[in-house]
Image (cartoon, rainbow, N blue to C red):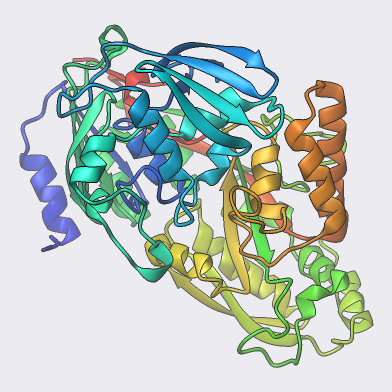
Length: 522
């Protein structure tokens, strides 16, 4: 596939006929795949939600409503019946039925899927008739309809025809037909994907929810890594909407009468992750694995000046974090969110107590185009750790190559971010902190973290229905993660979006813009 240089791409955008029917959207990150059951990656999900739909979806204020299901009822504590929307068609004109739901469930449960968390606790999906399915649960699930928002439906016939009945193994660099092609029921159809250049989506005239469709008949998404180039494209009129606004430009863009800026907290925590299970840290100057020692993990945390990062790098557009779950998510507790103050002397003392009075040297991995100012944050962290004797050798790369390396357990000390699309803390705890046990348990635990007490708490959270008791369990789990420094949270992101004055959209705290909530004026 031939790739155009960025300058040519932007020139192409200028030459395209301008129309109020086309929404031109730019951000820094490309998708990883078009397969809805392959990669649990926010940008990929943000694009694919326009093509692939779930049985449920969120309203503007994050309440759950029916999408491909019209309604549901509880048959028993472990059996939920969903009535499917009739008359829905895939983009190729074939009907959506219960067979597609059963197929999609079996597909997302494949070992090669990283989205199993979205069907956590579901043991089976049974077809009752062509437009009715029952979800059979291993135990009562208090957040099922939120969890399955990101469980997207794929055409069984299309997948079988194109030999893509299971997601590819991305860690082994596999691809299938669904990696580069899509077939959903949603408001837009992806007609072209040129990796690192452009995604083109056109409106589906037969969408079942036409009364709520956007007036954007076409959506052009451009991943533009360079902050300067991305903002230049907005200022010159080459794009209409930018959702990765550099922190240093937000105020200036907001004062431009041709533009408007909206912003809000994102339900995403940026944190430092450790390999806590391996016997050795590769390419380190010490024997063994220092990250098995709680004191070393605490020293890493105490060396970080979170207030300084907020002020100097984030320009105030972040909230220093003491927990792995951000505000806006069920289970967050402000009283527990105690942000560690930078204390390099205490950090050095902890390293000495742990047997590393001279510190040590090791690789530190960081993406350079995924999170807000990710590379700049990592550069600052390296300098902070150097003051306590930890010599972190920074290695940065694009998130498209970063992700499969994480999934291959290649990183042992790295920066990562985690959003919460379910708006419930279980998603964080089960995915990241639970011992890997297959399925959703520890499916993103690439840290070899295993703590019996934490596992018990998380397993209890999965099935506790009473809200007060459940939140008490969540608080206990978050407190243990904080006190043991299993992860080192840095901050919760704040996301400004900038757009032309004629664009109206709803800011999403999951950082997933939706064209159905966007309109274009003349």
